[in-house]
Length: 509
Ligand code: FAD
Ligand code: DLZ
Ligand code: SF4
Image: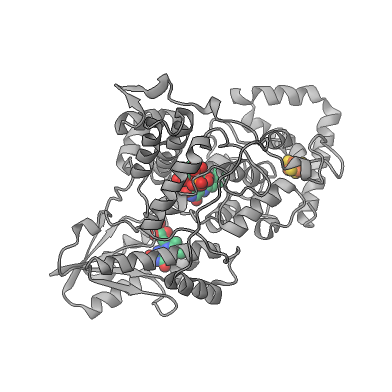
């Protein structure tokens, strides 16, 4: 008897655990289904990317001789399990189901009921496309009162051997962050992006998304993004060649009209499985050894993948499903319309939202310190902002989105992930970008109709959360400053924050 192997839309890797078990006579199922396409109101470009990549991957499986059943929208059954049932009914030789564990808890929970429903053996395999297994992270976390990424990262460096020299970190330091924090001064020349011409598969998918998901957020066309393994490798080579050497220096910078700067834009491709995190890190390490890129840039880049990406996955799987319900700072205000339209006068927010809505992308510092920081200091609903981040980005899957949003941005896990909230006033944004020079708000003012909204919201955030945050030693300085303000200034901050909330309700910021 033979088995059916279900390959999900973000499992597009030939070395996937379940595909490694394929034998002649087995069948592979891939299915575009409405439940996956609509459990979140995905950005149109995300749908275009996932379906184009799925169809190309399906074609490459067929070309390589796999027996594949590919169910395409719009004619497919509504759910994955319905397509599995239909496949089993059509082919009685298939008497078991093999799946590599999905990346999201909701789907894993659903799959755990499939054996009973289908009446056959259902086997779930570990997804071993990561450096660190779920079990190994659990072991690392066990008994630690603090789960600091930096400590986890050192262990990952030792285990992987990346950027190591006889058990010690190359260059004598684990972390070159201090060399990596230049604000935007306009001096750097950002290299052009590689282009990816349309092909019939992509065109068919764009028509599908236009017709059936046209009401979803974001701009669908132009769609100019890698969707195959070959294109993903070309994008990786391009990044290493053109952008990696400057990645570190400009990692935290932001500039009007520069949507990608020196970032890799590889996250959608790694998360889909078109690139492996190991090969990406190895390519970066090789660029250091060949003298092409400096250590600070290479270490900064590898830390994002070997450190942050693995760490957030570990946090997610160790703490779900309870993690999602956290709201330590009781943030509940509705999400303003501009998160969906980009229409706000705040230049920094407009730029970050325009990038998000046009491209299904924003670089890390826009996500963390602009749209995220605003949500944190304005007290927006944790649930609503998490839903938004899951929908808007081409790289968004809950295992990576949720810890970043709920933990890093909203501090809703009470500081498990971040040793202090990433809250900042306009001063930080002015230092790191050229946004404030082209904004109708005055970054140097705290109160009044033209004052930068980030300023009063920042100080009010500290005021209203004092009982929860003031014991944090990393916040000692801002609380001392707040005390020096005196009661009149603190009242003015409260009044300004209340006026800003009214303007948010009226869509007038
Ligand atoms: P680069 O700056 O080139 O970084 C290199 C790689 O490092 C990325 O491709 C990514 O794989 C990895 N990486 C960097 N930072 C992180 C991080 N904090 N967590 C996990 N991986 C990281 N990333 C996602 O892949 N999916 C998400 O849904 C997602 N949601 C986020 C939500 C918020 C609120 C924040 C603050 C960050 C989120 N990130 C998410 C992390 C990060 O912003 C993106 O990975 C990054 O911006 C992707 O662009 P890039 O490939 O150009 O990254
Ligand atoms: C994101 C996504 C979308 C939009 N559509 C599909 C789909 O139709 N079929 C499928 O197998 N996978 C899809 N995916 C990816 C899944 O949502 C993803 O596998 C789970 O969220 C687990 O990470
Ligand atoms: Fe953003 Fe304030 Fe600067 Fe305007 S002044 S761009 S709102 S930080």
